[in-house]
Length: 406
Image 1 (cartoon, rainbow, N blue to C red):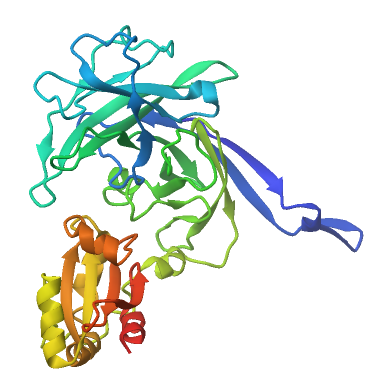
Image 2: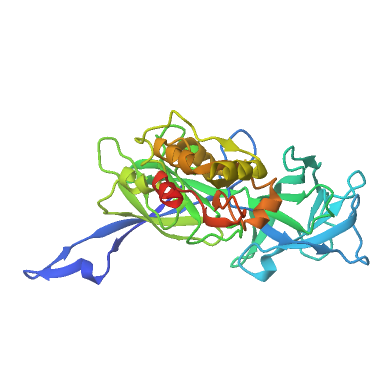
C-alpha cells in the first residue's frame, strides 16, 4: 500500500543558532498508513481479543408496529450507539420465534434507518443453548454487519459485531442485549526500509477510532506476523509505543500520532527514545516477580461450599478465606497458576484460614451478600458471624496477598 512520509521539525526548540549557522537538533519521521476494513471470514487470522460487551436496553415494540416475517412477540427494540453522531446509530429488533417463545432468537437490523424492520431482509437467527453450570440460556448472533454513517463524503463504513442475549433459567424474556466488535482495520508499510504490518482495533464498540483504542505494528518477518499483529500479546492502547525489531540493530520506536475517525488511516512517528521493546513491555508481565519464587509442596485446600468452610473454621478457630472466581476470568486463572501455589502464600493461608472457592456465575446469593463487583474478589470472613472483615478485588501478586492475609 502507498504510504506518505514527512520529515517534521520537533518544534522551534529543535533549531538553534550556533556560530552563525542553523543546526537540526532533532527530527522524526512521520508515516501515514492507509488501513482497510477487515472482518472474520475465510481462513485468515482474526483478533484474539475483543472489548467487553456493550449493553443495549431493549423496550417492547409497539403493538401497532408490524413485525418482520417469521418474528413473533415478545419483540423488543434497542439502539446501538455507533458512529460519530446520532444519525449514525443503528436500531435493532430482537424477537422471539415460534419454537422459542421465551427467548429472543432473531435479530433484525434497521439497515436503511427508516424505523421499519420489515424491509431490511432476513433475520440473523440463533438457537438458545443452556450453560451447564449457570443453567442460563444463551442466544448468540455472530458476524452481524452494520453500515455506520460517516460524512464528508457521505458513506457507510463496514462494522461487524457479535451479539448475545442471556436469560436466566425460568426467568422472563430479557430486556438487554450485548454486543462486541469483530471487525478491525489493517495495512502494510515500510518503516525505514523494514516491511511491517499495522492494525487498529476499536476498544469500546463505538465504531469510531481515536486515542484510547488499540494499535499494533510488527515487522513482517516476525514468525506468524499476520496473527501476531492482531493479538493481545502485541496490541496496546494508543498511549503506548510500538517497536520494529531490526536484526542486530536498535529497535525502531514508533509513537502514535492520530487515526482517522473511520479507521481509514493511522499516523505514527519514528522517534528517538532510549527504550527497547523488552524494557517497555516488562511492566505488562504480571508474573515476572512470581517466576523465581518457590512453589509449595503442601497446597492450600479449597472447599466449594461456604457453609462447610464456616463450620470447619469455627471448629478450628480460623477465619474463612473466600476466592470468588468465574470460569471466564483470566486473572483468576493466573492466580491459580502462580499465587495460590506460592510456597509463602500457601503457608500463610494454611496457618490461619479455611479456604473456599465460589463461582460467581453460580453462587449469586453469596455474590450479593459480599457485594462482589468483579473477579477475582477475595474476602476474609469472620466464621462466628459470617461477616466480611476485609475485601480486595482484581489480580493480586503474592506480596499483595501476603499483606492482605496478615
